[in-house]
Length: 277
View 1 (cartoon, rainbow, N blue to C red):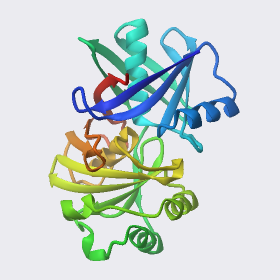
View 2 (view 1 turned 45 degrees about the vertical axis):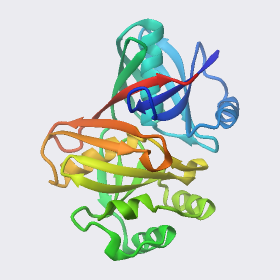
View 3 (view 1 turned 180 degrees about the horizontal axis):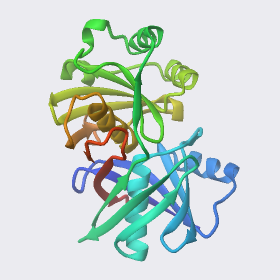
View 4 (view 1 turned 90 degrees about the vertical axis):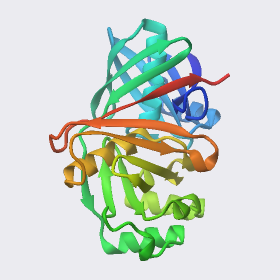
């Protein structure tokens, strides 16, 4: 069993979100996986064990908990599988869904694309909206009312908080312990704060206190859920959206989400991967 360290959704040869990747004949015990993830210290470490040719059992762990689905670690895993077994598509059997990831490599810069679990979204109750605004020190007038606050899902639940200007997004701050309590109480993996530069280009920050991490520099699962939200609420026709994340924490990341018009259908999320030396 070996551990690789890769940065997924990089902006070329810079930035991205670090992930640990472990490919093994058998998955370690849950306690071992949790311990390894805590030692690695990245927002997620992914563990994969072969079931059959190009079919894998996969689990994800943050430093503090197991996560049902993690996009950037899946992209890192796709690149690692391509590096070891050649370009192609692999089936990943997760704890609550089955997805695919396709990986390739070119001149040292790898890339991968995942097909997310099905997507859904629903409005949040007014008390939850009030609570999350207080957590970040925002007021109702800071919200972009074109995009309703919602619980969004593509393998994991996220709270979408759309903001109406870039400066408010850049100023994001919150108390980690209070954020952990809020996210765990309401079962949100992250809070996704979003500013729309235009209809198909979004700048985001993902608070990840539920995993013991203040902020995540690239969140593929949330990007998939957000694309599904845009489609399923009639806010955007089929096509793609570009997401810039991590810029305000000095680790600029680029994610692309592509989707059909079918409500609730899987979203394809892709990006480049660089090794961490």
